[in-house]
Length: 298
Image (tube, rainbow, N blue to C red; front, side, top):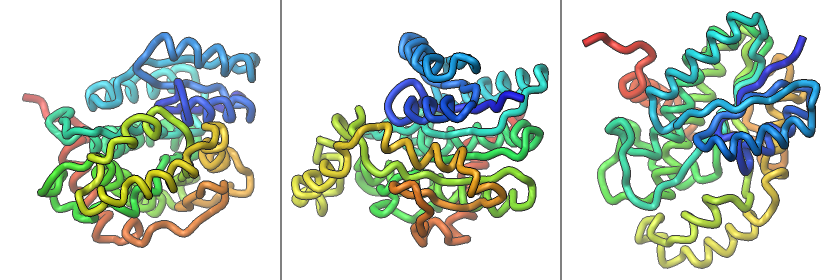
């Protein structure tokens, strides 16, 4: 039976390279993105790798939680109707914003980098459970190390600095990922985080060149930090996709869960804050409040 995978943010960059790797491993891949033209190009590239398992593109703006719900409903319904198991979900979508924005009334980075993958994962859990053994792979970032670690509210007080807010959202998602792995232990649904390290992408070559995305305390040092970071983000997206591909496909990980696959495509120790039960509890409360799994009729 064909193995099926969904990759969000899968039309370019690391997401597309992840989709190509999954296709090469024998998966029928669905890539999710906003741009239909890029989606069609991605499908053509994926099909060239594995024409026996046709890929497809689904359009969704994952900055909209309503569109996330609609996407999950469609995927779940299609797999239920076809009987084809969904065996891999890769939440690769991510974004950094140089200026504060809101989506659905919530700070945009927290929506795209955490609430969106959280909601999609939770809504697809019945489908992934039905397709077990299955795997969930959430893409994390080394930016978690510079994140504010307070999750009492969805957005901490103080000035907005895109890099730190991106790291905070990624930390929330990493804490959720490890907490979910504990929750699902013994269900045959494995949960992994994948840290791609650095790669030359639109985000690293665009947003991250602006020193205003970091706090004033770090801004003076940003040229030095940037030069160091540039050395680690000059590699190809195909190399940065390896951790996600390994997490999704490596047979040695069968039956394991709650592991972070680092930039060298090997297990690594997660940031301590991501394993803190109090952080996970606060993130869970924020997630349930701002991205409810069921909507109350009005």
